Image (cartoon, rainbow over all chains, first blue to last red; front, side, top):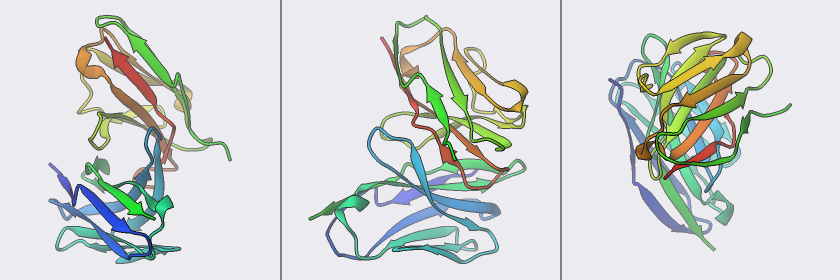
Length: 112
Length: 113
């Protein structure tokens, strides 16, 4: 059974700082990994999807990396802004039906 | 392009009552997901459809929850009878195919009293 862990559970940083969010998974035989953000009271917004054959994906100030062998992914946010404040979740697709398993998220607060 | 639509947005019911949620995915998306998200936790997959067939419902409490996807498009999720622990946000998402980028609706917030 796939298990996804996200550390830290919460993070508070001053505006402008670069930061890294972590996601680890127990079964390295994955198809894809996807990072989302969730604003309070809202649904999830997709940020990046990394296919198992890729090592990283970039979108603007965001860079996600994937190391299947060690069961880890990181989301790097450059020059953080108050608008980046949200909960960041990673989701792993694995198993016979590409079943999706989510972590519980990292709650990020960027202080102006 | 229209996003994933869900209704209602909020629902308050008494325990043992029934409730139904509706989801309209993005046009052309073959895969549809229903999730339960309890406060402070990540989304838990309840059921995954591929077109109008069920791919995975291993975490769906089948004694009280049911779901269907009509003609491979819209979907409904029903709870009957509801329990206090069913209070949560129910999220619907769709994707072009399995393991592709998921797009989420705004969710339905359910409170069972």
